[in-house]
Length: 541
Image (cartoon, rainbow, N blue to C red; front, top):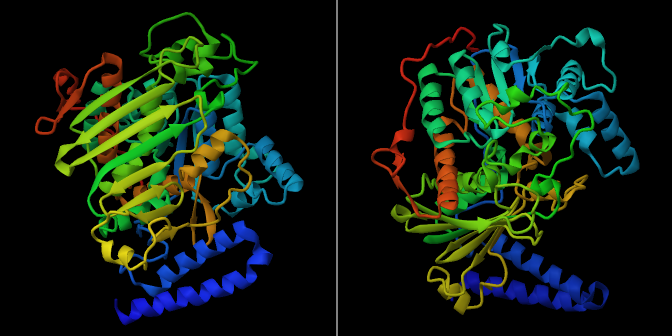
C-alpha cells in the first residue's frame, strides 16, 4: 500500500473516533449519515481513485448569435403541455400568476413565482396562436398578452392573432418560428408544413406517430434548412451531462446492461386527464382534431384523454420511453437499436383505452455489446430509476449521479482488498442542487422532477429545463447552428420508439437495417418528400 493511501486510512480512523464521541448526540441513524458523508468527502479530497472527474458543473455550450432580432412565435396547441412551454418562454396567464403568488404566501418555500420572475427575457413575442378548443385558445391569447409577468393584463398588449386552422397561422409572414404541442398524430404533419413554410420548429416529443412520417419529416427539415429542436428537455439536465463525462472517462468500465424505467400511480400519470366542462361540439373543432385519425363521432373522452388511443398517440413508448431512451442516447451515443422485442398489456386501466398501461421493451445494440431494458407500469409508484451496469462500477441516475464500485471489479480490486474503497458506499456522487424539490405537490410532478424533466441547477440556481431547451433553440436560430436535439437525434428517437410499438403490437422481434436505414419488413415506409416547395423568407439571423 502506498504512503498516500496509508495516510488516507489514518485520516479515516481519526474521523471515526471523533464520530464515536458525538454518537450520543447524533444517534445511530445520524451517525450513519455522518459516516457516509465523511467517507464520500475523503474519497473526493484524497484523489486516491484517480477517477478523472470533478464535482464542478459541466460547461455550458456557447452559442454566438449573428443577430439579436426579436423572434416572433406562433403557438400550435395550447393544452397542458403547450401552456407549460409558453410559460417557459415567459408568458403566463394571470390566473396562474395569481395562483403562484398565493402558493408562495401559504408556503414561503414554494418558489415557483420567484423562479418565473427570475427567468431571463428571451426577446420573443407571441404573435399567433392556434388551438381547436375555443377555451384554450382564449386562455392562450391572454397569456400571450401578459408580456411583463404582471398579475394583470393590459388589453392593449393583446397582439396575438388566433387562427382557427394551423395552416392559416403558417401562412402568416409575421411568424418566424412555431412551437408545436398538439396530440402526437399531428406532430409530423404540422412540422412538415411548418418547415415547408420556412418556419423554424420546436416540436414536442415524440417526433412522429407513424413510421413513414419519420422519413418525410427528416427529409423536409434537411431540405428546407430550418432550425429544428425536438422537445426532449432532458438534454439540458446537468446530471446527464455529468453522467456522460463519467461514462466517457471509463469510470464504469465496460457497460453491458442498462435498465430504464417508468413507474406512476395516479390517474393523471395514466393519462386520465380532466374533461373540461365547457368542452362540446360547439367549442371544439372535432374534424380538425381528428385529422388523419379514423373518423368517429364527437367524443369528449377521446379529445381530452387522447393519449389512451393509438389513433392519436404512441403509448408508453412514445410518451415516456422516449424520454429515458433519449437520456441514454445523450449519455452513451446509443443510436438506433439493431433488434427490439416488447410485451405488456392493459392490466389495470380497463377504461376502454387500447394502448398498454404496462410495457416491457428489450433493445439490443450488438455493435456496443449492450442490452437496454425498459419496463413501465402506470399502476405502481415504486421508485425505480436509470441504472448503467458496468464491469467495474454501476451508476444510478436520476436528477443526480451516484456511482458504486462493483464488488468484483478488476479496476478497483486492489483498493477494495486494501479496504480503501467500500463497495457499499459511493465512489462518486454528483448532486447539481438541493436534494429536495420545493413546491412539487403532485406525484406526476415528482416523477418528472426526479428525472430531470422539470428543473436542473446551474451556478447555484434552479432552472426550468424546458426554458433552457427553448432558449437553446432560439439561440441556434439566431446563430444558424444546430441544437442538441436536432433532426438527427430526433430520427434516432423516432425509429427506436416505432420499433418498440411495432414489436409490441405485432408480437415479434423487429430488426433495423443500418445500411439501408429501414426497419426490416417495412421498407415502404421510407418515402421521403421529393422536390418540396420551400419558403425560407422568414429565416432569422
